[in-house]
Image 1: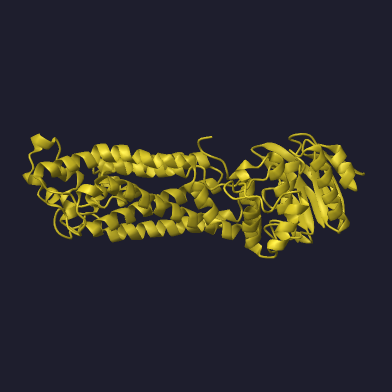
Image 2: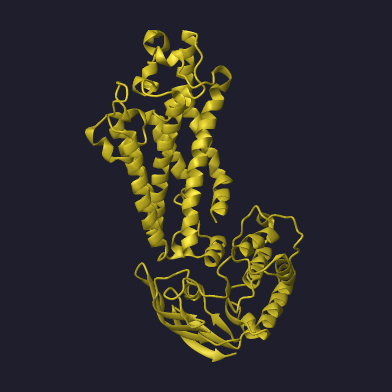
Length: 280
Length: 212
């Protein structure tokens, strides 16, 4: 069941949209960072651009939006799915849908990492240490590069942890956030409000991103802010603005609640009413 | 075998089914005739447990659907156009479905594919199948796990004259083997050929029930 949904998702024509991630990441992160590294005569770490993407407001806004568009036609409830559901039962079906969401989120995060890393792989180094281009950003001539490296990879991130940990935590939080979005969307679908759920999920992403950008005090009520690793830390070593462990716990708690809600709702839902594509 | 007792269904303030009652006995083949939008498909969806928000009671094999059981037991169905995984061939699609319950093996799948006139060794993926081939694969899917009950909504859609004739014979033989059949069709000839009785449904109401 989960495999069938996953294969449908993976070989969907809409999947070419993943490639659109290349444009903003290249224009806003890879080119400026590579140019700055060139100016300093220092190579970048292979994962630094990836970490920057997962901690930059605009790119991080696009990542969940593209993921939602990719999953807008799920859960499918076409006749083929009905053959499965009738044979396996509603409980197994909804558990399969949740497993599919987990698989699609992990695959999507992996695709993002690979698409970004391959662009700088040839000119960067592979080690668990930050590059001098990033750590000595203050020695760079701002007039020459036209941007400040610290805005892409903020010091409060590389002061706190090595790049591998930053990469793992950044994408772990992003994956939890994507899972939250897709589970909220799934619950909306089961309630027969697919379109409304789609726009509500998008609205909370956009609002959360806006709040996060202006560092508003209310930003922590939006799940989006909990998915941005850099805003969790202050400049001082192990000084938190909000402990990332608490964010992980919050995500896991909300995901558990959503999973229970979806599970209970799936027992009562009219299966012929949940299908369809938001864009059709 | 199947008992629909005073079933009504309203969706978005629109009455889809109005106080529908019907019965299908063991080994009986009953036809459901009605125009587009008459409520045939929705009634079948309710009997199959796909649509749950109906009022009234539906019993299949003495179990209340949506109360005692999620879905009717030992039932094969086709409702609307059957869909399959487009990148797999016909045999692989049936194998994936058969692997869920594991009550049949390769031999039965091949047997039922041949019964409906499909070649089990055909490598062509289902996305290259014609509408008629998909319909026959749907029929094989409904028959393959030896269900006692068959609920078939327009099973002859997209089939040519020769195939319709062949499928009629397949269903007649199923009836002779003691299967209970509820068959919806636009074509009254299909119903006359296979069914013992007919219910006519119009505007969500059963307007007549008669011997064929």
